[in-house]
Image (tube, rainbow, N blue to C red; front, side, top):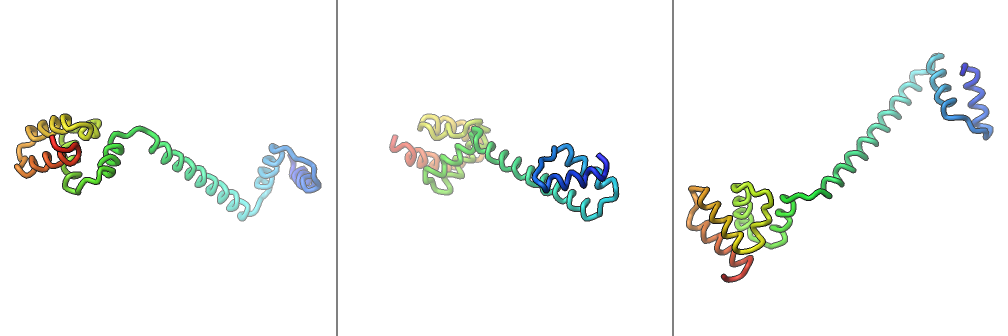
Length: 149
């Protein structure tokens, strides 16, 4: 398309006739090739940057939404601990046991008193500096969660 055709395309577009998208692109190319102003270049670059920023934002939003949709044993554990209304020291103790034993599914600690005692005993034998007060805390936690044994 020669520069005169671009003007013809603009006139026909304003008169209600449709112009093929490829003709519009050729018209833009020809306008830049014939010495379009710097303002046109800045406008096109700005529109491209805005488009890329919007695309990036949409992609980040989608990744954030999908991230919460995947199964996460750690998130389940944290939500479960929060929903049980445990005291801070009890939550810290359960988290410490799960962390030190590197449990893949730490919520298993909270399923039954037998499992809590089993993993607590493993933790106490693996940790050399367990105090009597921590043993009492584990017993109190078991009683709180599952009632008297």
